[in-house]
Image (cartoon, rainbow, N blue to C red; front, side):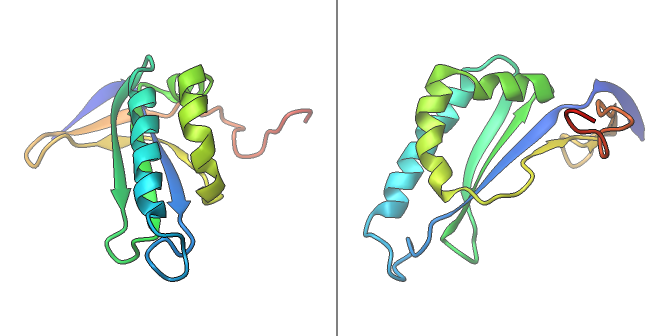
Length: 136
């Protein structure tokens, strides 16, 4: 069973790599310092309008890889949150460890539990989103 929902929420995934933090030449305690900073950033993001949920996770197979995952009401909420002073103050120091990769994804199909119906969301992307750029 499926149901139609409104506009697509956005999942923002910020990936980080702590070079050598797991003991392969990195500074002792750098992963703990990173985790504390990421926790503060997550708390700051959590105070922004349009925030739904968030998680800080470390890769099971590679402790140097981290991800900060948040869900938002839409792309506007995510972008506005990034402009908040407290978010900038807490998130900016972490960006030295950021992996350059796409980070915001619109949710097209979701399911909130094992027996819950699938929810379909309409795309908020413009038809020319893959080809348009500023000045073109």
